[in-house]
Length: 135
Image: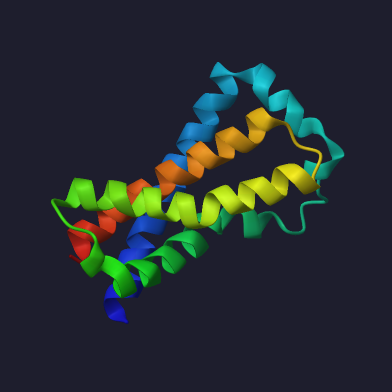
């Protein structure tokens, strides 16, 4: 359990920093893309903002548990294991979630594809961290 928590919190911290750094630069590099987020679907009163900021940690702790259960199935060096882990997560979880999101909510295909790509990158980074910390 200690390995799960340590690797999950480590990955969560890295994903939090990289995620918000990437968001900062993405908004400046692609401002037209982010105008789609002015949709009322994305506006809140701010009372749940902390949940948004905790996302990297919730995701990382869940992925750390998944890693602990199935790490023996991923072969090769830590980079290859992290890459395969990310792709498994994307196929098993992200694609179905993005499918239902696109079919049920008023979001653009570009948004959904960017979320899929972002989630894949997050899972690969987390997988590499897990493979280094908890081989």
